[in-house]
Image 1: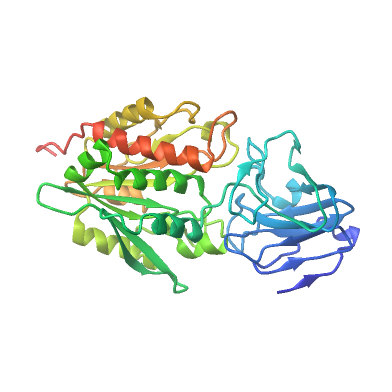
Image 2: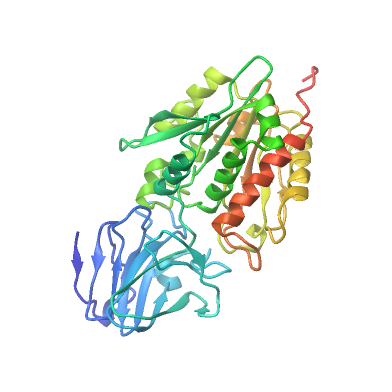
Length: 401
C-alpha cells in the first residue's frame, strides 16, 4: 500500500499510475481507495474539491471500466473528473444514467442519475465527515455476489456446484450444473464475463439460472429437455482484480478459442465440450458504454453456423421480447453476420461444431437512458430469457448440412 503526496498543478495532465491496492492522499478533503475486489482507478490530479481520475488499463488497450471508494474528510460537494486528454479514448467514462453509487460499502447500488453530471465530470454531496462512498462506471458483480447466490440456493436439488479449473492466479473457476444429462436431454452451455468489466450481463445470467432451478412450470419443462452447464466468471482473475478484460494483450479470453489457448479457463471449456458435446451455447456480454447503437439488447455471432442459427436466434429473440417486463432495454435485436471461417471466439467455436443447434452472444447494455438495468430488473430479464427458451421451437441442423 502506498501513500501519494500532493500533486503539483504542473502535473495535472501527467498520468500517475495507481496500483489496485494503493491509497491516494493529499491536503484535499478526499481520500481515494482502490484496495478491494473489483476496484480500478488512477488518480491523475487533485485541486481544491476536484479529483481528476482515469481508468487503470494495466498495460492493456484503453477501455472505460473504473471503480473506487472516496472518503470525505468533511461534508460538502466534491467533483470527480475524467479528463479526455488523460483518458485517451472517446468511448466515454460516464454512462447515460450517470455513475453507479453505493453508500454501504458495495452491498447495494443504484444509478446516481445525470442531474449532477456534466460531460466527463460528476458531483457528489457528502453529508457527514469521513463518509465512505463507492462509485463505479457500472454496478459491480463480483465473487461475493456469486457466493450469495450459491449460499441462497445451497439446498436446491437441481443445482450442483463443481470446479471447472483454477485461474492463472489460483482462483477456483466455478462450473454450475442444472439438471441431469440423459439420452433425451440436450446439453447447453452458458458463459459470462469473458470480458471482466461487463457486469450487467452477470445479473441477467443469474436471473436465468435462478429461474432454471425453480419449481415453475417453465423450469420443470426446461429441465426435461436440457442439461445446463454455466460458467459465471470465465475471466475470474480479471473480475476480482478489477481488470478491463476487453482487449487484453495479446488477446482477451473471448479471442482465445484457438488451437492452443493461453488461458486455463478456455482450455477447460474446450475440454468440457469434448466430454459433453454441447448443442446450444449462449455467451452473456455487455457492449460499449455510450455508443448510441449499444443502448439496446442484441444478439451477435455467426448467422450461418450452425445452419439454422439465424432462424433459431430470431425465434428465441422474438419470444424474449414477448416475455420481457416493461421498461426493459429495447430488443433483443438480431445482428448475426455470415461467416465463412470461424473467428477465435466463443460463439464461433460452438457455432461451427457438427450437430450444433444454436450458438450466439447476447449483449446487455449497461445503462440505457430511461430503461431499467438495476440488479433486480436484470434478474427479471434473465427469468424472461428462461421462459422464452422453453417456448422457442429450435430447428436442428438439416440432414443435407
